[in-house]
Amino acid sequence: MPAMKIVFAGTPEFAAVALRDLHAAGFDILLALTQPDRPAGRGMQLQPSAVKQFALTQDIAVAQPVSLRLDGKYPDEAAKVHALLRDLQPDVVVVAAYGLILPRTILDLPRYGCINIHASLLPRWRGAAPIHRAIEAGDTESGITIMQMDEGLDTGSMLLKESVPIATDDTTGSLHDKLAGLGGKMIVQTLHQLERGALQTTPQPADGVSYAAKIAKEEAALDFTLPATVVARKIRAFNPFPGASATCNGTVVKLWRAEAVVGHAGATTGSVLQADANGVVIACGAGAIRVGELQKPGGKRLPAGEFLKSFAMVGARLH
Image: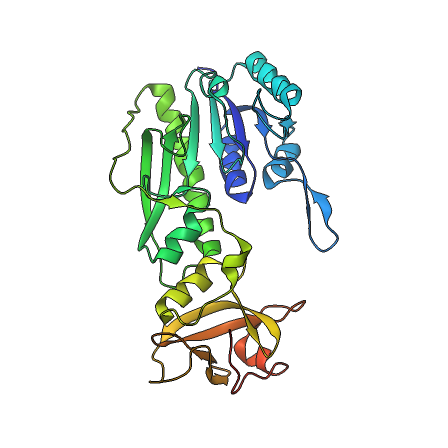
């Protein structure tokens, strides 16, 4: 049997992991759709996406439309991609964190439709930031759902689903890496089962739906009047992006690693209760957090002991 013909649509490293696994499994990847190059880094030079970088190393054709909507602002560009997909006649379009909406004309084009790798246990955390929101909410598990796409926001029927526990010290970065690896494994499994006709779809339940709104940079500013458990979860959820922050002695400091600990009764929220090599302890609305890694503007992330050598925090108040 000839290899299944795939068009892959994705942009960040989460998607690139799946693309690498599909390529290693021997699938015929006809085209990689990915977002246009974006400025990044201190020099703000245009940088290709992780998906594009891998595709170019494997001589996989790449297309980078701004939009796929024929009725949008760039209809001519979208029409070219639609025509290309019709010419390629893929068996399936695999989508992972692509960032563009696929219109009905594309959803209906492949023989097996469009299949999405979603980083949550649907229907919980539909939307843009499921990993961040799961950690922020204090969920004890996350996972991957392989989903048959429809025109709704992550509302399609489920094909495969597998959970992973969220460790008490997991950050968005560490959980992302676990889920990216799981997603790559599961999409290969899904496509093999599709080829054999051995895959059933399961509609998402109506109960338990929640939405993972896109992370806004303003959310990074910490509110120490919240309970310590909530503040610590936010620090883990916003690591590595956008990085939780607070102002100390007029300087915005990023807090990268923290745990909830017992506080001092009556302590002013945001006040530094302890600052030494064991960490910076900050009073919260209930309890306190012990911060183990901090960063000054333009500096590197440093363990608390190293950070305190050049930044005094004893007796300070963060807000």
